[in-house]
Picture 1: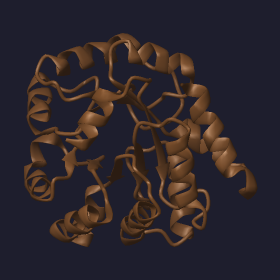
Picture 2: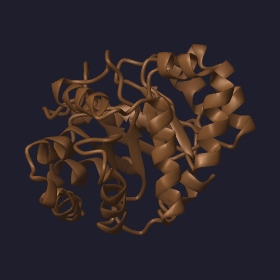
Picture 3: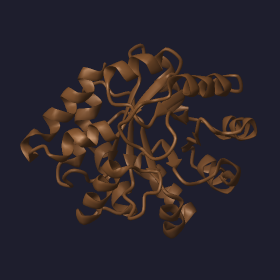
Picture 4: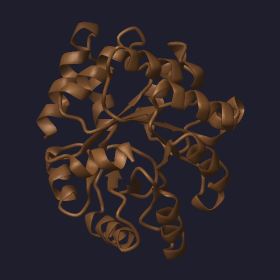
Length: 256
């Protein structure tokens, strides 16, 4: 409920930054999370790096490769969340990964350790809604929100199932294909959001392709939150170490 309440009760624009764990640098990543919190983010989505991220465009693939080179894996992601919580990070944290990350770790062990570290929600990019019940059952045991992905091509039946399972928010994908900065099909994603809202009062976030304040202004007219990933990573990938925190803070602040 923490995620749902945080989005619902926020009086400002709900922005959810996505950042791959350990990118661009491992040593100051926790400081980066605090910068995202202080600059006005509603919650933070942290990506578990994967060597074959099927849903990701070149930008997030790049960040995932860098994170892996920096020694980040599933265990280190969970450990990083714990470190951030111990230092006082308050915002909800959502982990985003792939099913093989979780299976390789062991589903129950993953959920238990994620909960103990302070994770509030989980997105599994390649797990179909109609195959997600076993994982959802374990997440429910540990009070971790399940956040399903829906696309503009999702069937009415899949939309209905997703709304039955979702607890934190529902993530609507605004474009076809992988992540990245590109043109958003606003009319079609609005239709998707409208369909979702007929079935649930769980908040709806829109992501993939969002990069500007103009994009966010349009999306917030019909959705509850906007997810910004590739645009933030592009801002950081060529930033010098001593400017990472400043650049991230300014980027989020300028979107509000």
